[in-house]
Amino acid sequence: MPVSEKPRLLLHVCCAPCCTYPITALQDEFDVELFFYNPNIHPEGEYKARLDEAERYAAKIGVIVHKSEYEADAWFRATSGLQDEPEGGDRCEICYRMRLGKTARFGAANDFDYFATTLSISPHKDSHMINMLGELIADMYMLKFYSADFKKNDGFKKSAQMSKEAGLYRQDYCGCQYSKKEK
Image 1: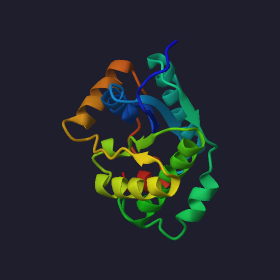
Image 2: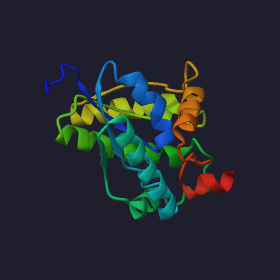
Image 3: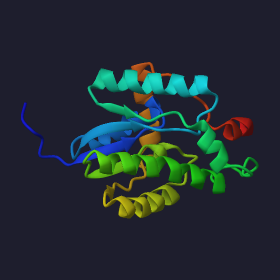
Image 4: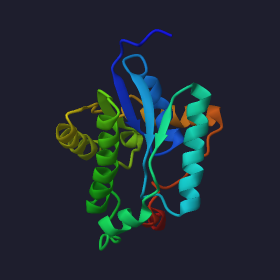
């Protein structure tokens, strides 16, 4: 099997539905592998359901998925006192930092050229904040961050359609127990 000339990109994935369109958008330019690290997802049964679905989808399309430990306790400590913050506030910034930081560490340790995240596919997520944090973290690990707003150009709509066609489990909250309460 010939070695690809494409740069390697580690794509942080929050769930299977959110990775459908970004993978498609990135595969022409990069060798894409997935990284599942989401300590914010609660309860643990929901975390396992999302991880299982991401692994199932990745296997179906032939993409490697790496996973990290479930670190809910670390997330609760990091966001302590911020439970009343609205979605998109300080709690989310801390959460993005945790997930992007862990993705970058894994990427740097495993010779990836770039890292990115699917988080910007959500209409509820601040793509500017995500991309700014990604750039800052990339500098710390001497990686490149692929800045994107995957919801643009009907990305969210495309991901919803692709998820439906693939029969993927689709949740209705970002994952943390506080965003679930806001529903």
